[in-house]
Length: 323
Ligand code: BT5
Image 1 (cartoon, rainbow, N blue to C red):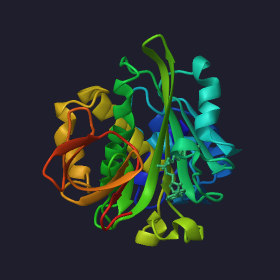
Image 2: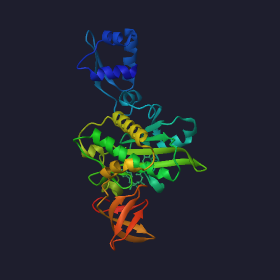
Image 3: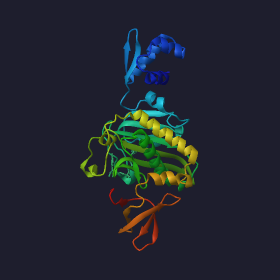
Image 4: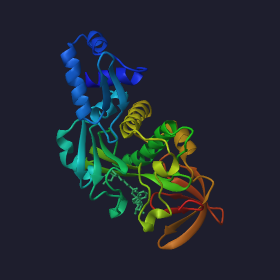
């Protein structure tokens, strides 16, 4: 009922009367009034004027279940959502409960006290700066194949953000999975999994998007950016989250969870590393090469200065002009 009323108020040009809403949904006017009261308690600013009805003035600035679901177009992803004020890490929280939760469950928080990057690194973010969330997946793939999930999610987030921020800014991907805007990182992804024998029990994909940050700690200021630093457009985090989950379910259902040929064009189109000069380390030796292609497993194919080709599997590459 809450989602339905919000949907009508959003689509309305002006006021909608309690009478109209009660007739439309076949409920009493008291039921409408109670629902509006609950929506206000959730942070919706709804104006009520006698003899005119209700008008939606603004939606909550933090992720809100009703708001998110009013945009969500999925069968599974995001239907079960846990919204927290503060948590150590949404990934850790979801992993601890994963065995008892349905696939597609999402955990999001206004603040992480121990936001994690890969290899024990830290993911920075103050209260309400980030849209940070984790999603629980149970794909039927092997642990080795799961290496594709992070870059695929990077590509999906990049596409969803490009649609959301169309005309404002464009994102691309720094191989394998940092989402970047004008050579600076706007989103990081951390995938963690639990396996049994050679099968995956579950995968938790954690996504952190810098939304409202106005500045960053000095160590990362040169390579980090946020939506607020790139555009004045107000960001509805609930919609952005719903858009990402909708795209994620659609693409995974259509193309699967393996890095296959169907993904190749989508990934290459999003990847800013190709055709650039890169630096990587092999046995502590610094190597300069040109990034020429992506392999069917998602590795970066590079051409060394002597013309030989090599595959770079993961880890740190510095891309000229990026970071
Ligand atoms: C990542 O690791 O980029 C993965 C970040 C995943 C964060 C999400 S938030 C929801 C979920 N819960 C968690 O606890 N984590 C996930 P990595 O590629 O290792 O990059 C980490 C590096 O990025 C750091 O060492 C910094 O240099 C830089 N960094 C840290 N915070 C940043 C930020 N807010 N924006 C841009 N760069 C940042």
